[in-house]
Length: 456
Ligand SMILES: Nc1ncnc2c1ncn2[C@@H]1O[C@H](COP(=O)(O)OP(=O)(O)OP(=O)(O)O)[C@@H](O)[C@H]1O
Ligand SMILES: [Mg+2]
Image 1 (spheres, rainbow, N blue to C red):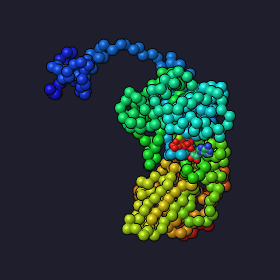
Image 2: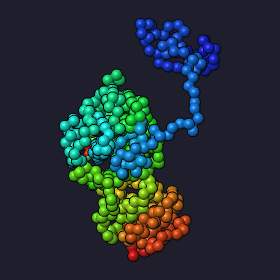
Image 3: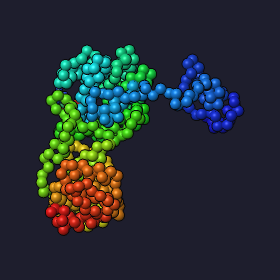
Image 4: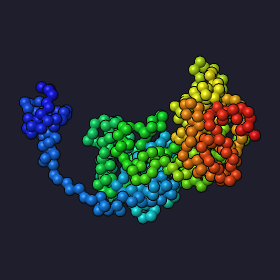
């Protein structure tokens, strides 16, 4: 019989009984008299009293050596991971289908075993032959690069424990299954159980383990959210599949700052580190076209100039579309509303499109002014001069707010030959060669654009 129980009849403690689902004890009938807790487990007070005493030690006495990152052999990946994979850590790598997750990790394993160490790929999505074919484009294969094709997570954990590789990759966590757990591969229970097994083997043997994870249609990591809590690091591989540029970004990192990005290009030999991202980002820019504004972004420690494009076209539908690539849809909706209400830009009845060149995703509010200006410029058909950059956060009142790293953004723009910057009013100085146009409100910025003074 179920009833509330405030006081434990055994230890007389108050609020020490926990409610739990009762399971059939082996050979016994559930729910017998006096059975208030799971399978006869003692209550919290008793459990604490009988627990083995574990002695805490001074933090200063703990050896930090084990937790130092080891280079992956790929400089741009090391940059994102603040040095490399940490022994015993678990990293989840997500990204859209075909973006290059398997390629990137195979290259990291290849780099690890080229220096004489062992590395292990557990391939649950592709056969060993398929992996071999893919690997041949990287170069000669070292003996230390091991592959285990199969989808048994327990067997994978056992292989990691046995081989003790310098790094192990499981591709993917949705494709492996734990035979002892219910559900089909990829189900919440299975993904959780498999991740649990692999986290445990990583921690107990001090081996860095990398899990490849699928993403849903809107770009979020698929599977239970708990997966992100279980792991130490979450990386995402981003980019436009039809272009060569790939970004690797840390969304969560227990061993260093997040936000740092690594830049690669996809080519015949797999992913190579990008020496000049601007070849991709600004190389094909059309001069003098309305709706194009350059935003100096800050990705981790790295400034990166990104072209924001916008287009506004008369809609044939009663519900005009608001489509965006690389700009947060909620942010776009807000900027459209602010443009209409605060800057007299009429976008009613117009389909609105915004995108960023090179598949770069803009996460900073600092991009607001550039996005809004691109939209305003597109709807009015007036171009913003090619050598102009813009940054600043836009508030609901239409005010342009100060953002961090103004001087680093301006320095990068100046280095690449830009000569003018639309900035929040509080920006005090500019590097040589750049003239500042301080704007207090979006309406001010738009009036400059309308008057043609941003075009010339
Ligand atoms: N042997 C090869 N030669 C040339 N290009 C290749 C080769 N193998 C893969 N690619 C290219 O690399 C891209 C990335 O492939 P990869 O398998 O690494 O992506 P993925 O993120 O692991 O995808 P999935 O989620 O489907 O597993 C592919 O879309 C393909 O264009
Ligand atoms: Mg893959």
